[in-house]
Length: 129
Image 1 (tube, one colour):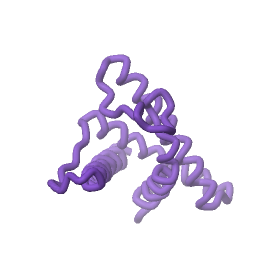
Image 2 (cartoon, rainbow, N blue to C red; image 1 turned 135 degrees about the vertical axis):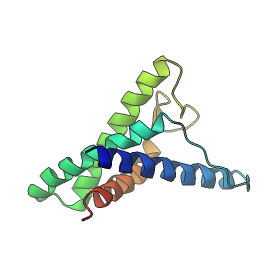
Image 3 (cartoon, one colour; image 1 turned 180 degrees about the vertical axis):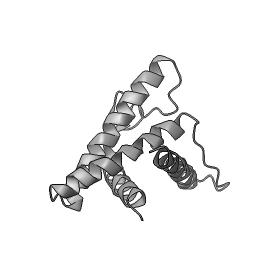
């Protein structure tokens, strides 16, 4: 389980670096600078729970659409909860308050397709032989 936690933590931080880099390019910043926070490593590491969850979902014949929706809900729950706890200590590295589809500045509903894909990507990563 530790190995999967580290694998998910590193993968998530790398994805975030790429994402923030491209967001910078979208805003005309061509320095290709991405950013993340050390808080994000354990948050992304929690995605390691997808491995046992995916086994149970597949056992119940859930297809990729159903599994992706379940992972999206789980990711939103983790993002909201960790963001809420970090925000109480003024340590939350993200603030989505400016987004039209935010909930308490902690999650963005328009990111659902992204989290759907990320959840299935983690499933594939964690279930590789």
